[in-house]
Image (cartoon, rainbow, N blue to C red; front, side, top):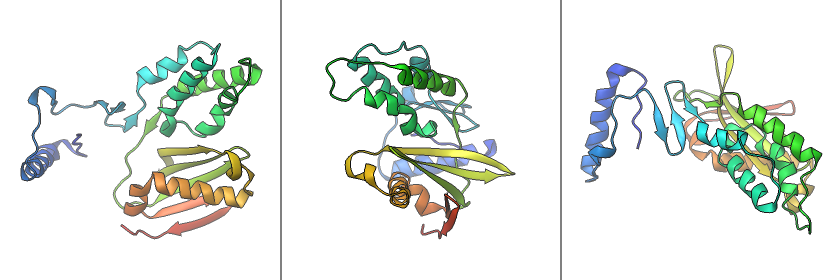
Length: 222
């Protein structure tokens, strides 16, 4: 459980309200595992700071320090590590496609030039600071949709003082029938996948949807 306050002077009050809820439902905390009035820390595998939610640097380092896979198991390990950082990586599915292709049923594992180039580009991308922000209450958020032959992607952002602040990235690799969808069907699929994944955001914020020169606004239903 994490209790975060926008202002330092409000923190004690926020804690009091939290403890009242815990007491109401007879929930207990282990004092040895509690930390109070900290500026940031690791929570559920992520680094939570005043700036927002940062990717776990140990998970980033694990990929950056990783050598190019030489067998199927190592390629699977790489894909698993990428999946743990999906929400921070724009178009994660597209960046991972060359690696997925190595998992296809083949007699000999092959790590070719496309895989190596994608691997190096991924490392360079991860070397930059990855930060997600908490959206302001009831503010309109904007969802950008994009499609590719083998993947659909979306990014949820909040606009603030002319800047676009990243909230969440969503991606899906297309397999089977959905890979044969038309571009407009893929766009609809991207919206459905995102709405399911980010359901709490859709309930509590108006959402502006942008994709291929189309724009619509979803009314707040929360």
